[in-house]
Length: 551
Image (cartoon, rainbow, N blue to C red; front, side, top):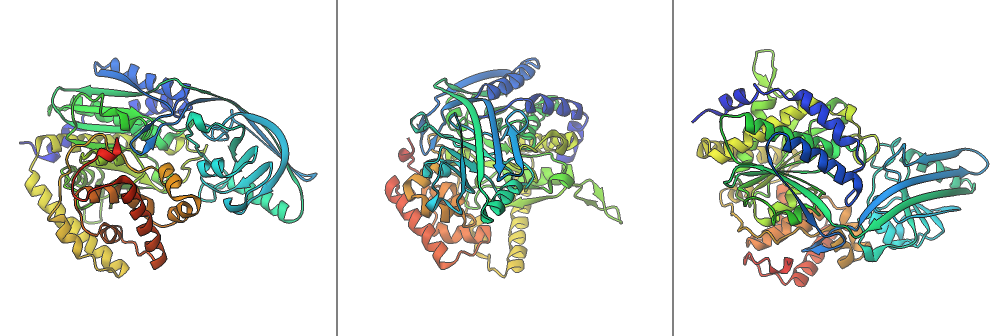
């Protein structure tokens, strides 16, 4: 059996940075909102490229404005025009157009137009007026406010950029009001002027259209036997380079690298709207995957985005064949810088990261499939109109493809698995021990969890618990508090349900240890109460691996 090093050396003979650069441009020209013409055009770009290389390709459709498990698909939607003009007193006029700022109109916003006096809301509890300015999640603001126009800002996004928000509503939630976004820097100016007693008038025109057309995903594959499935969500507004044209391109490069290798292994590649496409994909896959690699935000120029490559592993209680190979592959590919003494050091920032929810690996974990994610975080221009191609490195997209391809080859062939798994578990135990010393935490319990991992049964009907479902079940006040608690939504959406299915005792305590979070008494009570409500509603039997409540 070839060594991992020799397999990588062979892969590196296939140079693809030029291909990466060209593909990145082709994907980012499309406004890729779920259910839009733009996302369909982007999928066609990928399909045509992969078809020309002889891959088996298959489009599949899934219903718009529907529910599967605890996730809802949005109504199909397109935006044609968006304009916002903000007049502050008799002074400055600020004008924004959708053509220049594709994130101006919130995804799935209904159309409307008009003019009105703007009211600033400190929060959603008392947010009244014809036009309101508020910082809140798009869907919550849309549901909680009766304003004709909701103007959103986000203090966590790059202050000079127009942030991206989405409503992702169903066809039964369409109301005669619109949602738009403005930069945080502008919001601060407006709030300052309102505080001084000046009036702010907003005129707007939002032209969008809804339809009931089916939405699409794309599967590309090679080989008849079960292998690794690589997922990249292709949705997000134009340009959406880091999130997630980068993952789409790296996924394609992974396929090309695997084909060029003498280690012929089966592989499949999924390009979908995030979550809503993935939950239906199991019906259309060529085979049940032996593992999943999710590529979501990779290959950036880290000196621009200030990102670190996160190697996101499954919860520690889940048996993972991919995780040991992921760490080894990353070290082989990225440890290319030299110390003074010539020792190989990381040329890019990367780190093992305990499981965190927020992308398509959540879905496949709930299926019971070993799933890992490569994801760069934070990202300077994340969810803004400034997430453009100049922050992405084609060379690093290629490196990510090398890592993903190497994981696929090693895990399929079982290359020295016992030895690598033993070393990996030792590394993880030491890693948590050092982290515990940093934060003054006793994490010794995690060692026994690593030694008694469980392999979930395959249940493709299972889904994570969506944020929208939690909001509806718990109400705005509880939901907003939960969103502010570190790790709260990750626990409730995936970690807790999967732990309960596998009969894991005290999942709340284990989650805090694994993620090194110390919740206050009030925070823990809030999460515990929310968890009890969910378990009661789902009628879930501990340890049964019964996913009937997901259907």
